[in-house]
Image 1 (cartoon, rainbow, N blue to C red):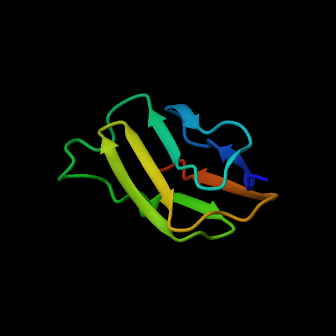
Image 2: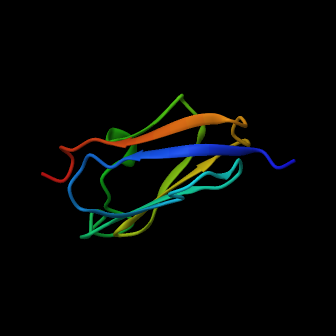
Image 3: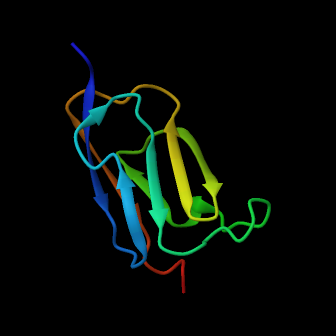
Length: 95
C-alpha cells in the first residue's frame, strides 16, 4: 500500500495563487506554493523562505525558489503515512 499524507495549506498570506498538492498526497511528494507576484526578484537575490515558511510537524527537507513566484519544499525522507502536515506561510513577509 502506498504511504500517503494529508496536507493542509494554511495560506494565510494574501497573494498565494496555488498550493500543490491540495489533496491527500504521496508521502514523497513535494509542496509547491505559487504567489501572485514575484517574491524572489532574481534567484540570486531572494527572500529567505525559511523566514516565512513552516511545516508542522517539523520535517527536514530542501526549501528553494524555482522561479520568482514559485517556492518548493522537498522532504528529505518519505513522510509518515496517515499524518496531517500543515504548511503555513507567514502573512507579513510580502509587506
